Image (cartoon, rainbow, N blue to C red; front, side, top):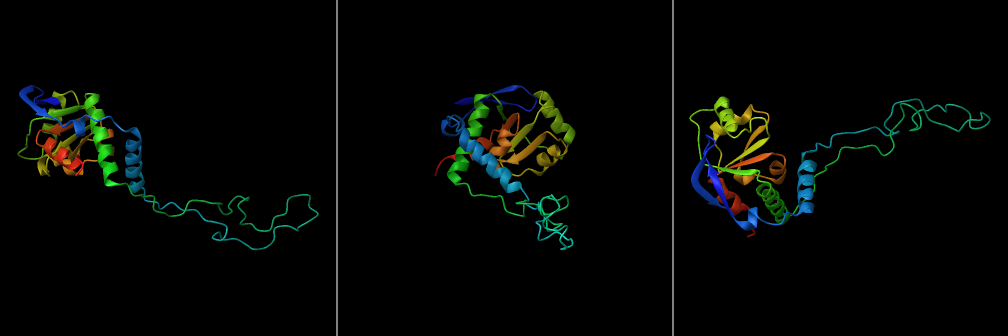
Length: 210
C-alpha cells in the first residue's frame, strides 16, 4: 500500500511511503476497538466517588413512632434509606476501575484503528520537518495549509521534539504524540491523523506481532 507524502506547505511531494498491510490494511475488529477504548477510559477514572450508608449517617437512634396503632408503616430509625437524609442503599464506594488487557489485543486494536483511518482517507503522511523555536502561529499555519485549523488533528512524531510539542500545546484541537506512545483512543478521537514520514517505520515496528 502506497501513500503520497505531503509537504507542510500543503503541496504533494514526489515521494511516496509504503504502508505494511498487516498494520494499515487489516479488516478492523470492532469489538477489540471497544475493549481498548473501554480499557483506556476505565484506567482514567479516579474512582473516588462515595456515598454514606445508614451506619455512617449521624442521627438519633430514638424510635420515631410506636410500632403499632398509627395506621402507617412501622419505622424505627431516622437513618433509614426510605427517609430523606437517610443512608444510601448500595451506593458507590471508592474503587479501582482499571482492568487488564493483553498486549496482543492492544496491538490489534491500534492496527484496526489505523486501518479505519486509511480506509476513510483520514491519514496523511507529512514530510519530516522541525522548528527552530516553539511557535503556535507557525504550527497553526501548517494546519491552515491543509484546511485543518478547525478540526481535531493528531500529529505523530518519531521521537520527542520539544519545539513541535510546545507549538501545538495551546491549540485546543491539535495534539502531538510520540509514535511509541500512540494508543487506540487517540487515533479514534481525532478527525485527521497526521504522521511524519519517519514515524511510519516506528509505528510498524511496534505493532507487528513479535
